[in-house]
Amino acid sequence: MKKKLCIIVTDAVSFNFLMKGQLEYLSNLDKYEITLISGGDEKQIADLESRNVGKYIYFPFSREIDIKKDIYCVCRLFIFFIFNRFDIVVYSTPKALLLGSISSFLTLQKKRIAIVRGRVYENYSGKKRKFFEVLDKLSLMISSKCIFISKSLQQKFIEEKIVNCKKSRVLLQGSSNGLDLSWVSASLDQSVTLNLKSKIGYKESDFVAVCIGRVCIDKGVIELEEIFNSLKDFPDFKLVLVGRLEDEEATSIVKKLSEFDNFFYFDQVSDVRCFFKLANLHLFLSHREGFGNVALEAAGFGVPTFGYDVVGVRDSVCDDVSGKLFPFRGVELIIKEIENYIHSKKELENNFSGSEDWAAENFSSTVVWDAYEKEFNK
Image (cartoon, rainbow, N blue to C red; front, side, top):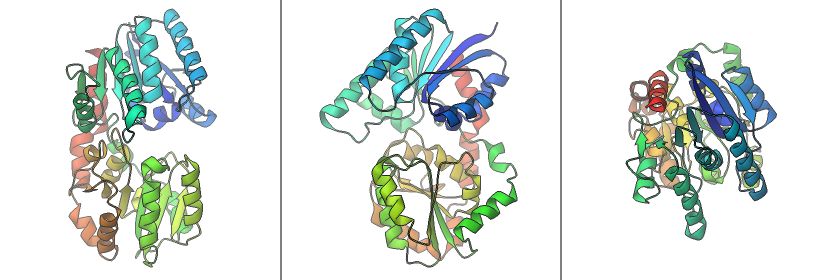
């Protein structure tokens, strides 16, 4: 008999990007009857349902605190779990982790697994930080087990006594989804790359830096503007930003930078391979991460990542192998390093030539997926 597995995330985009391939892997094992629960927009939900990896149920989760909606969702989840029993309930991403842990605990679901992907309050302080810490402590205390997607993230939670170290674990070298090597090596329609080259006016002499991911203050959009303004007068330098605009300041910055001929903005896309194929450098200026999946993807294409030495990023960038780690907000050091490489792309490539092997040896997705599946059943 198939085991009943329920997976809860806040937004369907997490199923489509953070569990890309993994849901298919679990479904193809034919061992589970899978139920997926999330909020999200119509496009992401449609994309998820088209994958045909399980029964989907919509819940109107919000990322931000919304007392009325949050109470409604936890009550609705409680009722759902009263009438639907599961062998395994997995919840991740902050809001789903909180509401999923409470509702599954109160309804006595057999096995309740928290996957901790990061924390929104990493750079908060005072009472605001304490409030969020208490919520995390509650969620993890009432979970059967807690899987952290990076060692540095787990260490922070243990040091700050938010989780019991006996209950927490990191699988393999970290990551929740690994790097799909078949996706990296799969052929890409040449017209897609040619179209991108045309849009950015690409020349072989260009030094192309890409930044891929959500565009907001916490992901470093202010520092990205500073870096661009310092390098924009180099004739061969191009900066390509790819991702969803998430706040007014990010929208304003992108609008200003778009006035320059060597800055290019693209909205969130489902396949970023064409960007990495043209890139010389990946900028990953996130202030906090659970684990930087995009840094792994860059490494898979042999593109070095420059990022901050902060929680989650330091696990996904191997310093001096797949990229370089800088002190938090050490923008001047990053600018100086890029300047050194703009006219010596070959040196950049040689200095980080081991990135592809490092990513493949440590984060092959099929190995990661198998480790998670086994952990679910322990």
